[in-house]
Every structure is written in C-alpha cells, then in structure tokens.
Amino acid sequence: LGTPLLVNRVGWFNKLVQDNVNGFFYNGNNFLECYNKSRYIKQIDCYQSAKPYSIEEMIKSFYKTFEEIVEERKIENVK
Image 1: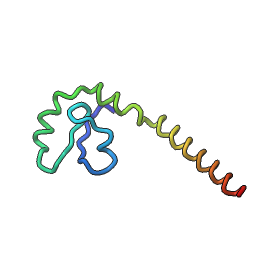
Image 2: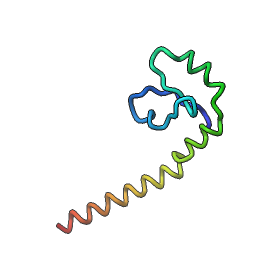
Image 3: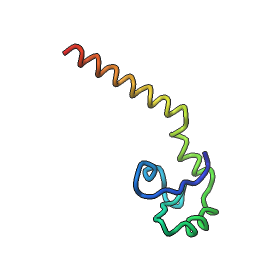
Image 4: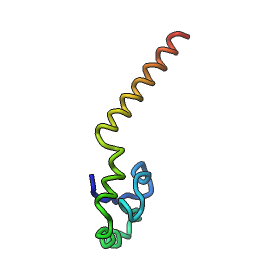
C-alpha cells in the first residue's frame, strides 16, 4: 500500500489508477516520463486508493459472493 501503479489501459488494473494521482498509464513508450512524474505522487493518495482492496475487504467481498452462489443454488434446487 502506498506505491504508485504503472499500468496499461487494458485489463482490470486500469480501473484502479487515477493518472498522476495514484499511478500512471504506460503506453509502451513513456516509462521515463512516468518515472520522472512519480516524485509528485503522494504516498497517502496511493494508500487511500488501495485501502478498499485490502485483504479484509477482499475477504468480505469473497464471502458475500459465496453466500450469493449458495443462495442461487438453493433456489435452483427448489425448482
């Protein structure tokens, strides 16, 4: 937590990054530009943006999803 992300615009991580706030979008040619701008990123902004994805929050999310799956299976079995 607290580390800027360097991601491309393809895939899941691009939804987490706010360009120049908690990371950068890498296009294959702008690594040096991202590196130079990284000194202006605040660690607290990175931490705050990552906090919802902590282990505790992920476990809660998985548990909720599993409960929903179990409930769906119960409904399907009743039919």
